Image 1 (cartoon, rainbow, N blue to C red):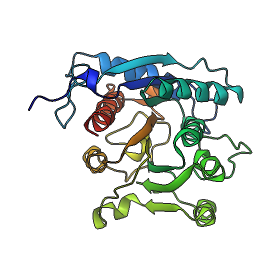
Image 2: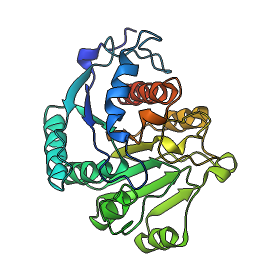
Image 3: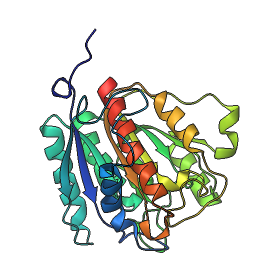
Image 4: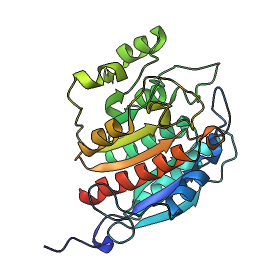
Length: 274
């Protein structure tokens, strides 16, 4: 049987969101979209995902450019408008960060369109602070805002390894947060989420030995293989995704950017196979 061509599949809308104004430690994630695009365009590899689907030949990726970030609260409305336009065109939004705050306006917008989302969140940190250093738009707070808005039906956080007392209390307060610490991942079945599904990948969820190009190095993280196997288990209808917190200034030989580019292909292939 002949597989469908790119024209018969849902296109992927790649959206850069070059901001790190809500980062709490180091700046640099604003250059993430540029580095990921460069890795995607590099001839060092090819365009095939692990399931055999190929970008451009079987999955069309439409680069939507970057949001014109002003580093003010008005950025959220501009992000939301871009996401609405991508969805209205029948295209799957895949955002390139940027710091992790960008997930909040994206998920709130998609939930307005599709209803509350089932969220698979890969990260070293739960990002559930009510506020960090007085900033309720911190990259450590997006999931607190998402849950307050009723935008999530389920939040599964995989790879966390810095859950302090405040964030444990936050998870209990919201009641729909499930956490799978990195140390327990080999002991549990990989979660399979329902749809509409949103995937948010903070690259510091991966161990820094494999993904050094992040601002917050936290040893003991997922291997790349564990992350890819987790993604491979998901089969629900995908509403959107993001890949965030690449800091090219801390990368070595571009290896983290190459990982981010691979994740773009794998997420695109997930949507293409659905």
